[in-house]
Length: 88
Image 1 (cartoon, rainbow, N blue to C red):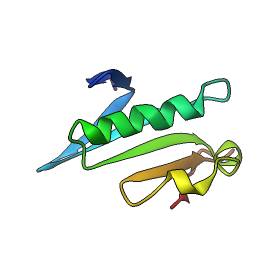
Image 2: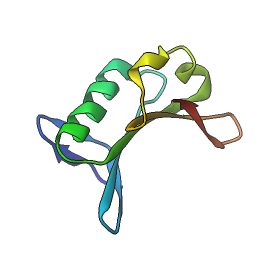
Image 3: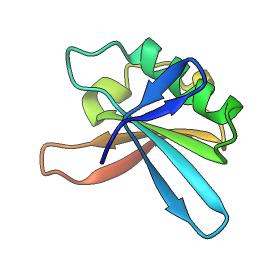
Image 4: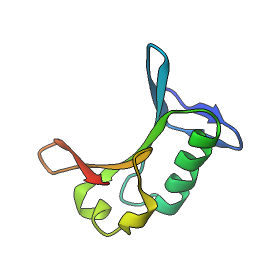
């Protein structure tokens, strides 16, 4: 995965299919999650069909759910390395 420039921001990567693109922004325990939401929003404004912010499940549950909707999802990774959709 390589960084991708989107508008005034850079996202960590993207998933591309036939006729669609999903932006990915990954935030670790020390990273700024609010900045990640902004990066995902910038990707949506730049033409991505959807965006996913990825962090730990534990950290993700502390973020207010109203930031997320059908185009901006929050994914959490648990201690076993399994991915869960936290919001919406």
